[in-house]
Image 1 (cartoon, rainbow, N blue to C red):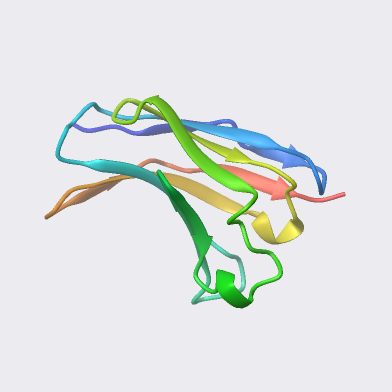
Image 2: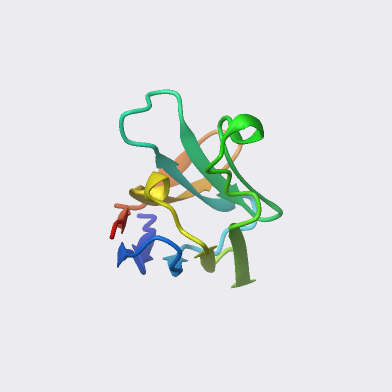
Length: 117
């Protein structure tokens, strides 16, 4: 049974920072990243992987995460971090760690992130 466990979420003020952590199985054929659905916006998602973090419409979005979020890991297949800086209310959502292969995918239970003053 594969299990992904997220931690590090919580309440943060605008402009603050959080670092999420995902403990994942070490499987070479799977990539690990983060994903979240923007509340109230059916087609808007935040997706982060090594070398890339972005919103669905980052190119035209004032809340772009390209220069604010980054994925890192000492071991990408076991512990993966999502560093979130200069946070905005639009970043509020449940963030899920995901492990995806060619034919299947696994998700953690999610960790809630709320950005509010």
